[in-house]
Length: 82
Image 1 (spheres, rainbow, N blue to C red):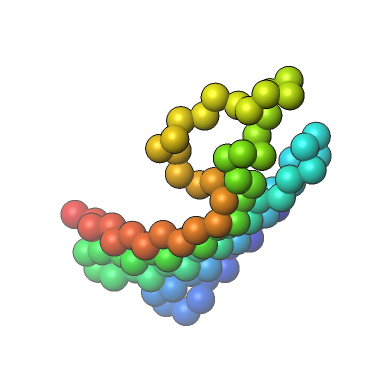
Image 2 (cartoon, one colour; image 1 turned 30 degrees about the vertical axis):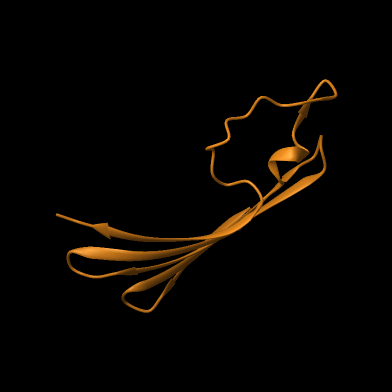
C-alpha cells in the first residue's frame, strides 16, 4: 500500500508498506521531499528484511554484498534539477 501526501507548497511525504505473504515479511519505506527551483532534498527511512532472511530452497540466496535496502537505514539525497 502506498500513500503520497503533499505537505504545503514545497514538501511532500510518501509512505510505502508491502507484505510478502509467502515468506511473511514486511517492508516499510518513508520519504520526505522538499522541492526548490533548481534542486530538491530527500530524506528516506526504510525497514526491510535483512539480507540473511532471504533463502532459496533452504539455502541463503546469492545476493550481491553491495545491494542497498536490506535491513534498516536512512538515506539523504540532494537532487539538482537543470
